Length: 198
Length: 352
Image (cartoon, rainbow over the protein chains, first blue to last red):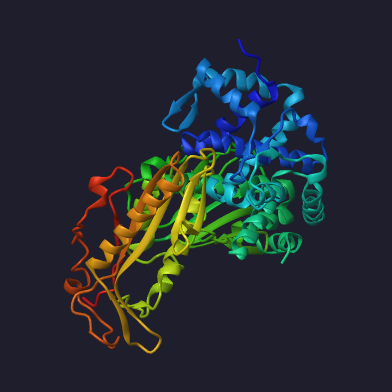
């Protein structure tokens, strides 16, 4: 049996479980999108990108894509943890206990904070709006401007992102250390930036 | 304006930072729970059916957060689905569930002293916390609430809903600018760009995270297609949307300059068929699908040369609403890459 990236496996289950409460089923692309957002929030917390456990490339269309997430999704479908609904996937009951067990592990608590903040953004926005907003994030903007698959969040490419995160930290850290606040504020700002550019 | 200054602006004028500032982390918890509850309510209830106000609140002041649950069962939003509703008020209790709350003489302002309060009436919505209040920015112009923006999984569903939600009564504020007059009899000159912007915004907001939407994309050296949609992970799929309009448009001094009728609809269909052929030659490995949107603003017995007419009866105004257009050739019947045209009738305001 194929060995799966444990971080990507947990993230897939967590994101699917949280988003399908609202949407019934979700597209695989949305899992890539929200795990990438969670990874960005991991950086906001001044953690090391390599500790996230897997990486992303920017596709030619400016979308985040993780090979590990892709592999995990296929394997979870094959094992019955996910089921297909047309182009979408839905988590099955079989996955509930493993997700519950993994969520209780201390090692996953820091990622849960990021995954939760990413998913909570859908309380304020539709998934389409989150996607529109995130397309204005510096790394995905660059991926779209120079269409060829390349790794996202490499050392040399993160400076713009850190400038934005510094501004964000200054603006919200007095109010709360809860990651959900900067997540919503940042996406709102990116969405407005996108709207004003049109 | 750079992102840093927009971040400051967002912190100043939006409700989530406001609630956090007033009540700290409990305020953030409360505002997120309230937003999620509002979304759940609006998934079950059509906002058009609510004639009164909606109030949903959660206590956020640490001194007032108790563990006591309200008396009676938690509210079942599904049971409200087919009701004509007046005022609605729910308290989110310590168990995270909504309970019907009898407001009595209390006002949202009074509740806000200890709670995060959501208030909605007639497509206006705001949050209150402590002595502060902020209106909710609605980023989807056709939704009645920022918390009722559904997501569609494909372009066909999205287009069908666009016809109903945005065009039929001109509810989208971008689309609403295509009219020369308040009663929606005449179009302004060159309304195409507004129609395209309205549809592009709708598709961006409603197609979930898996499609890219680009307005006005060149498909040859002369003509751009109105909108191009591409699934994000399928480089070989492409959807082209062409928009044409029917009706009378007038210039700034009220002279009718263009009258588009059925032949115009045929021109648009031929044009899209041509784009599809070109794309197929240019990129034979791509799976391309064409979607033809016709904004139908035809009215019967309109004044011929000037926009002097300001009122129209239902009989004349809605005369074309159910009159389909006959195409010859009918590309949608003879080729598989051409969807049946999406004719979207835009109603006038009738005087009877």
